[in-house]
Length: 128
Image (cartoon, rainbow, N blue to C red; front, side, top):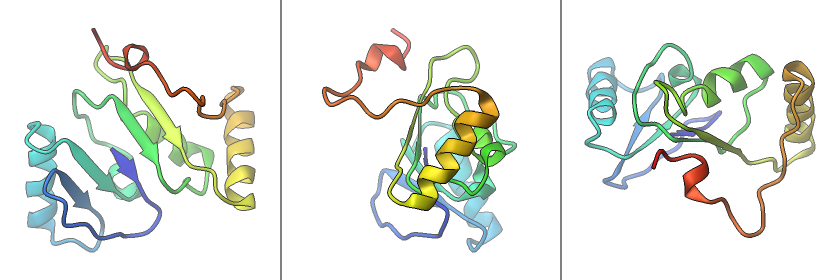
């Protein structure tokens, strides 16, 4: 699942895009495709960050960091539900992003490490 602050466009056949500007019937159809595992990648704004329960989301990517720690928690909480493992990756590309990341770490009393150069072993976030 990839989260954006703004609406983007994509015609890639394996992903589904859901945002407030989409027709509600289209959004529901896209939600069902993702939930039923017919589509593997979902790109969404914060409208999808709360209140959805979908099994088998192992990875949440914050392409754009949210504006506040609580929205961050709801976004990353999409991964690793229902007893599964999960991983969250956040892109920090500006001074403002770094400030939000600092607020997130302070709010939840955690340290979020930079992405390791060698990558991440999939067994750390995928059930084996």
